[in-house]
Image (cartoon, rainbow, N blue to C red):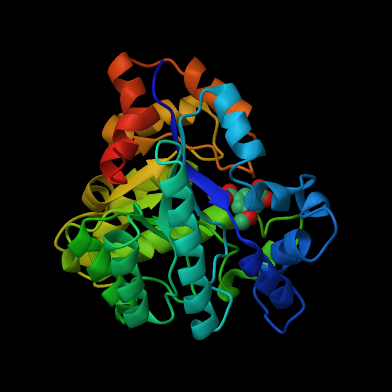
Length: 340
Ligand SMILES: COc1cc(C(=O)O)cc(C(=O)O)c1
Ligand SMILES: [Mn+2]
């Protein structure tokens, strides 16, 4: 049996859920309000937002989740505080709750060292305190990397104010997972209809934009060894890579885009890995493997937003070599997220 490590598995704690319920009734103009209200402030924990009760699944690790993992032969969930994490809270509350969540997640991983690994949260809007918590999470808590849910109050990691966070991750050789949340305020207009605020469309645009801003902004010239992970088959960036590369190179020649040492394609190959979360499409997976190299593609479920069984069937049915299967199902996750 091939070891199965799922790498974008969502989790929450009552303290964060309670704070998000307050946000859902607060003044925030964020597009995330639709999701946060639907999951944290209604009966049914999201049932009327997406027809599924997400909240029960998020708050559970040791009961239904672990039971299903056993039934389906899933060895491990790499867990992280679900989007939007602590990023809708003020910096102090965000820092306090990130510490609580990291401690709680580390305790779970210590209790089940072969079943759960974890990505640490932090308050991006307090970059220096964030870097300290990142160091504590790796050096004292033994967590496996970091989670950020894309923008924080509409600002992105290409902004040098956040670079203490990137510096810490690069120095420790640990990966930052950039997970979606609803798109930042500037995108809000057209995404307010038809459910497009959500994972249906806006999530991909939000993270794709984040990744392109970082590459075009020269982040990987500053931090050449920084590793970023994005889910959902790379948020369509792998599909756009030829066009991104062509148009960015032309924009740099025309003086419209910042001059960078390397190209978009090189940055995406060298500084990014992707996961298959929520894109159970064998054609998209084969394209991504051929485009990026199998060492840059990791299997994920995206539980509880995606059910576990179809995601297991997807990867078990996927036509690939044994070497590719081991890389996709556990080898790449072991390398990128320091899982033994
Ligand atoms: C934070 O809430 C989420 C909701 C959904 C959804 O299917 O509605 C998907 C994701 C996700 O793709 O991670 C996250
Ligand atoms: Mn997810």
